[in-house]
Structures are given as C-alpha cells and as structure tokens.
Picture 1 (cartoon, helix red, strand yellow):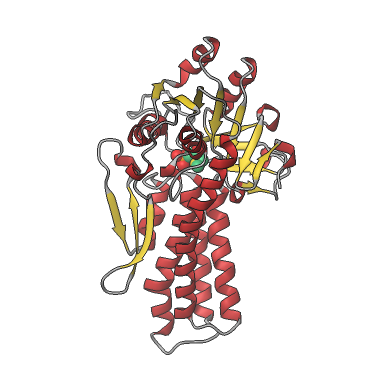
Picture 2 (cartoon, rainbow, N blue to C red):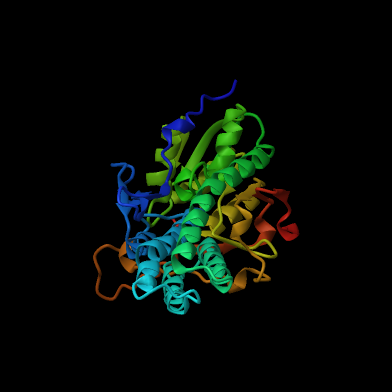
Amino acid sequence: MANEIRLDNLPRTVALEHDGEGRACFSYIDQRKLPEVLAFERTGQWRQVVDAIKTLAVRGAPVIGIAGAAALALWACNEGASRACSHGCDPAASRFLEELEAVVDEIVAARPTAVNLEWAVRRAAHRARALADEGAFPDEVADALFADAQRMEAEDEAVNRAIGAHGAQLVGPGSRLLTHCNAGSLATAFYGTALGVVYAAAERGLVERVYADETRPVGQGARLTAWELSRVGVPCTLICDNMAASLMAAGRVDAVLVGADRIAANGDTANKIGTYGVAVLARHHGIPFYVAAPTSTIDFSLADGSGIPIEERDPSEVLPYPLAGVDVWNPAFDVTPASLITAIVTERGVFAPGELR
Ligand code: MRU
C-alpha cells in the first residue's frame, strides 16, 4: 500500500516577489533555526542574501543557485538600475554592467563547491550583457533578471519531480534507504533531489524507512532531513554518522541515496563531507550507491573530481571553544570517486557515472 505522503506540509524554501512599494524582495526559510522554529526572512538587500548563503541560512546546491540569481536581481532592481538611471538612462548601460560584474563576483564567492551558484549567476550576467548589447535600458535588464530568477525557482521543482520519477524506478518494494546530509526540499525550491526520489518512491508504496545520517559537524541530517521526513510522513530513523557501518553490516540498508554539489564529467561527485565514507561502506557491503542531482550540478569543464574546489569552513563548527594546541580541519565536502557510484539520476534519466550527458 502507498504511504500517505503529505508534501503539502512542506513550505516552499524561497520566493522572489515584489513588495507593496514595487521593490524586489526575497523570502527564505532560515534553515539555521530548524527544527525548533520554522522562520521566514524577507529582504530587499542583495548582500543579506549573500550572507544567508555564507552562513547556511540558505543551503543546498540547487537553492543557493536560485538564491544567487535572486540576489543579482535584487541588486539590479533595487540599486543598480535606479543608480544607472539617476542621471538619465544610458542605453549602453556601461556603468550598470561594470557594477554588475563586481556584484556577480561577490555572489559567486559566497560558497565555492556547489557549481549551481556560479552556473546560475553567470548565466544571469550573460543574459544581462546580451540584453544591454541589444540596447535594453538598465531597468529593462533588471526586470528580465527578476523574471528569470522567478522562472528558475519554478523550473527547479519540475526538474526535481523528474529526478524523483526516474529515481523511483531504482527503488524496490519495502526499501530501507540511507541518506547523508539534506538533499531534500529545503535544499531546493521544493521537493528535493535525493529526497525527491524518496518521495516519489514512497508515493508508490516502495519505502519502508529512511535512515538519516546526522551529518556532523553542522547536522543537516539531524536538523533538516529528519524534520522534513517527519513533516511529510516518511518513516525515519536518525543515526549518528559512525553508526552507518553497523547498520549496513546488520543487513538493514537496501540502497544509499545522496545529492551532489558538483559532478565532474567522469562522474566523480562532490557532496557533503562524509559522503565518500558512506560510499566506501556501501561498496564493502554490496549495497547500491545512487547520486541524484539536476544537470546544472554537472561541471563538464572538469574531467574528474581532482579539480573540484572544496570549501573549508570555520573551525568553530567542529570545536566551539578553542583549545590551546588543538587545530581543526573542517572541509565541508568530499569527493566520491565515480567507481563507487552505481548510478547518477538526473532529470534526463538514470546514467552510469561515466556516461553523463
Ligand atoms: O553545506 P550544505 O548544507 O550546503 O551541503 C549540502 C549538500 O551537501 C547536499 O547534499 C547537496 O547540496 C545536494 S542538495 C540537493
């Protein structure tokens, strides 16, 4: 029998709108406050969005791409276009475009590993330049950036639902699935990638339970995945990261499903720190290991994962109070070699890691 899946219990993660005065504004769930409080923030300031990305208030590869495009739209609508037009609009928009380049660089630098951020923001900047070349005024370019960012938010859900439908075909009846970090609705506009596969499979009655790794040091599994699954009504068991091996050895995991922050052309995949270890464990125990991600997460410019930049975060995430003589190493991501990945699911279908397109 199909589980009763209550996706309407999940809020949309972000929204780009106009406020009562016609200014562009961006709303987002502050994920740092979950699971205690479901709090929404609203701002017209592009730098607040950049800060939200840096501090993990908004996190997860697909949604930081959307937030980055929205930050650029906030700058263009609320600052860039009005400044460019204050002394009479310049159709060549040269000053506007100069400022835009600096804003783009600042947004892209917020987080280096997930390629979605750079992909979304550079794509928007390219469109702005093309429109200006055609003679568009800065306020027209700003309106286009706003509409594009809104469209990206809407399209993300459709992409995730397609990933879910393809991925559900890999899930057998009564499956016990293990996931790491949060690749759920909160990491996207809505629905999620790895958890999108869980939702699609659960709607078909295929999921017995999801094991959520706690995901040290920031606890995305404990705070976000467990919260999400509980709201939707998918049975969830939370485990500490160091329990996955015993769980697999006990024969209690049928498949592993994770998201991705950047996938190289050969299928090597960067995802939350600890993913690589889970993949090694899965291989040792003969358990399939699946990656679910949109094609915007694939970086075809990198032949393999050795060129993926790995973000190192503040030591205080690992050790809240400094200890004399103790250093902390805090990489936020690791790279799982393609050889450990059974298949990669995108909105286009299910692929062997070396056969991405
Ligand atoms: O540091 P985070 O929380 O942004 O890391 C997120 C992850 O590693 C996710 O698994 C990944 O972005 C995929 S989200 C669909």
